[in-house]
Amino acid sequence: MMWNHYYVSQLDETDCGAAALAMILKYYGSRVSISTIRKYAQTDKNGTTALGLIHAATHFNLAPKAIKTNISFLKGNIPDIPIHFIAHVNKKYGQHYGCRLIPETT
Image (cartoon, rainbow, N blue to C red; front, side, top):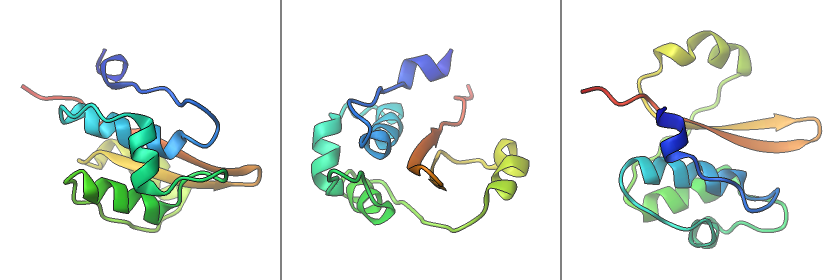
């Protein structure tokens, strides 16, 4: 299963953004530690900002784009989105990042 091959576990509750970016980097063949990503994303005790993830992704030669949408759009369109993405979700208990990788085609 593809997901297991690229999965990177969080080290603590502030690492979801860094772990999500690590999975995308791993997909592209780059093994970057969460601590290194945290450094470039300027992760602190509150976690990682979306801007921090953009800075870190750019440092690792990705070309990130930020868009603002709502959860109903994502729920209805995830199968049709042809790119890997990290979703930044604001919940009443705090923020969270999730990663979606596109299955490899041969």
